[in-house]
Image (tube, rainbow, N blue to C red; front, side):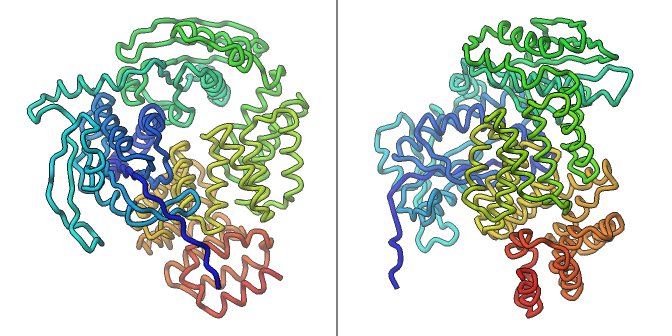
Length: 625
């Protein structure tokens, strides 16, 4: 039988890893993920692109990058390591993001967009040898660079590395002129690489100062829409909604907040809504000095809310001396609806959708439907309805057909073809229907429009997991974990994908992150069993059987007849070695499960302990009938 030829090529590989990531996450996971994401968006990823690097694998806190030449790889590594001290200026030592970097040249095995082989392995081994903030190169890399770079190399001699049959000659890159250079001198040098012509800004969650606390959804919606509008301006770097909303309700020192977020400017404000009147106060603050450079108060009729948002966006752009391109101005001024009733219903629905409990999804779906009644041309409301339907079907067993979901997404995209969440729902529907190529296309379209779409990231990750592409699942789950720092599902699913790749230490770390978030979700929504379901399986995975059983008991008490609970209970029992109970739960699950839900039944790593049992084959045969 003919085998397909293996494609190989010689290339340069840069491996990078965050120093002490586990310690940073344990101290404050949300702050750490937000900080890493900010460094990546503003500095790390653009520097890779500047030097021709192609990021082909993200492993939680680690990165693998391909370069066409080793000179470009090392030049990129030097710029990153010289730039990071300046970006960490003013940040306490125990909270700073630092990288170790390894660079190697090797013969690689090409597998689609991924690489394998000794070239990659040795690059990661070199990264592990590098000092915090340092760069380690192989002898091959050092030889090819020659005198092409204005840096010095310190020969570390031959070092034994894991799983290598021969000693590896290692060189450290000397990043600064002379070992006696002072810290202040080094930081001063590093700041040169940090200068950016693009102002960075974070819009902090506007405070709800209405007499009615339940009006908070409205102030949150105003904040989100201002973030969305400012993000359309190419001359600004804007922190995402998911990052800034981790600060909601906290007493903030603005100087410290700006430093932690890594931005030069902050927008903060408040909203008071009473009847048909709204008062919005807002100011633009210089982060380093806590000094406002612009402030305004708007007392308007509620019908003027869209104009106020446009005025705030325009004022920030003007104050920061940013050129607003004509197409950007048009995009900002293009409103999704001119109905304040539709807008109000949509904002309330979006607040319910974020909770993703069964009851909240049903409420959200009803509110989105109301928004469509007020304005049949409101595309965002259709997209919200589609995502409610998708979550209800995949996570709560609702009797909703794929055709229904696709019909709603068709309506949304017919009105606005640039709605990422509509494509995300469409991709999920295709996945449920096992239309794999169409699902991938829809997810790619969603992420090309909005790389931070949680729905697109989570569902594409889940899709890749069910077809056994755990590497791609890890990439998308990792990003989903970053964009929703309060979400428990993405880190718990990420840990499962990492367990499948036998990355046990990282898998355990993300399981612990997910369990911590699940605890908070249970506290906020004790009527929702899903955090207990997924948390129980994770606890069983990491060797905490007593806690796993306790969480599973709680899930069963909340939702004794829920079919998804039965499935997750089977996964937990399988991991605990209680095989008979696992089959009992699966038996009940299959009696009610739709065939298309078996996509993950056949690939779920939690069920691995029972796959060799003859009863499993019987269940599988029954399920596909």
